[in-house]
Image 1 (tube, rainbow, N blue to C red):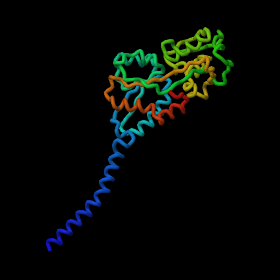
Image 2: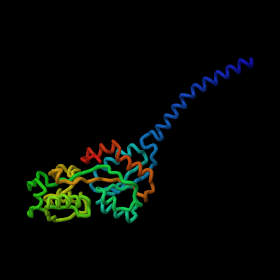
Image 3: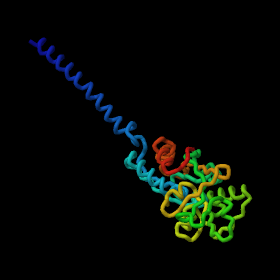
Image 4: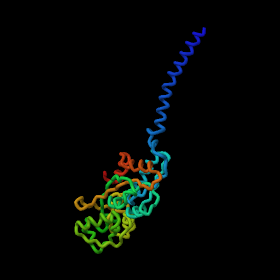
Length: 266
């Protein structure tokens, strides 16, 4: 009789084990879904602060919404300004996790002790922004030399101001600006409000105000290409999360968002 009980117990144990195997497998799959294999699962939760060039204002807000959805628990906050101003903030030790400038020169001006290795995430080019309908009939860079026009440019220390000077100097054109602005959005704003007849801005900035400004193309041979490097900051208190966000900016998902906004491939 005891032998029969033993056999029954053994059979029951085998059946139980067989049932537990698929359950264990399911448990592992669920763990993967909730962990590293789930979007953002391997990225520590954090409240990130990213210093970013003014020309990235609209597109980065869209990118952040997508990133936060895919990485629950992570919040991306931006501080937008001219790249030179952002670099000054880094030098002064302002708390932040990552930096994205509108040129490599500004990024390179910082000490390597300030940031990680930069990666170019996008490129841009200049256009002439005019009032809606181009009332002054501006067609080329040369037209900007007309003393009757009110032209606004960014200051020379600002990336877009430096690019503007580069393209004008290359064509040996002298443009007397009625004002020199601290960032590209300030240039665009002057044209939008009718305080200037024209200004040099990035393609992507003009695209944010299609009902207020017209964008006059500048031929490639006369244009300048802006590069946008991104890097983590050594002062970050969320190093892994910051690294994950900067790396994501080069992903197909982020690149589509940037290129849909008019930015060029890196």
